[in-house]
Image (cartoon, rainbow, N blue to C red; front, side, top):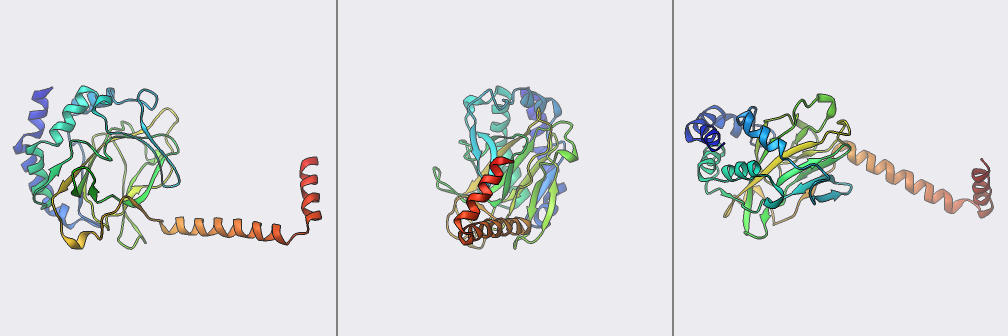
Length: 277
């Protein structure tokens, strides 16, 4: 197992990725990013997938609100041996050197605590609305600069959804949709303008889930143009979300207004007829 990791994450392999993707990364729209398929040897991710906990087997942190419906775990105690080894490799000096050369960001610092990262899992009907990420690590007091996602979903069909979406700066257009297929890696800059997420409710079969590994990387300081003040995750409506929200508000307001205008006797008659039917 260790030999396999060395053969894939050795400097020569990572140098080849830099030479292949560096320019594409910097020029990508709507913000710097890259999508790399077949990122790791399949046997490595097979072992990670085999030990990936189901929704019932560990005490997941549960998010269930209008902005996000997902499961997450940052605890190494809830991860299998192969998963821990992989995450450690992705936080290693060799890999950090690769990220710095690929992205042009100097002084990258990994997060051994996996704050907000680690294991992510979304069940049928789940989602993560479009957002920009929190930009400061509370514990390490560092600036968040990069996200790295590795998907673990074998035989994932287009109709299952779960696409990772990237939106433009003014939130008027989705520039890119990425299907979360097995061994696909996405790396991207995180700023106040890197709007992204998985906004559509997941449409996979009930016995399937959308699984991923997430690692975030930091630096001590960053360009002032990339962020305003420190903030937590900031969610943004897509144009269709705004329309639905306004329509829902209008409908609710209309019902409330009509109820106030109707004489009490008519309301009582309506309730009576509804009960009889």
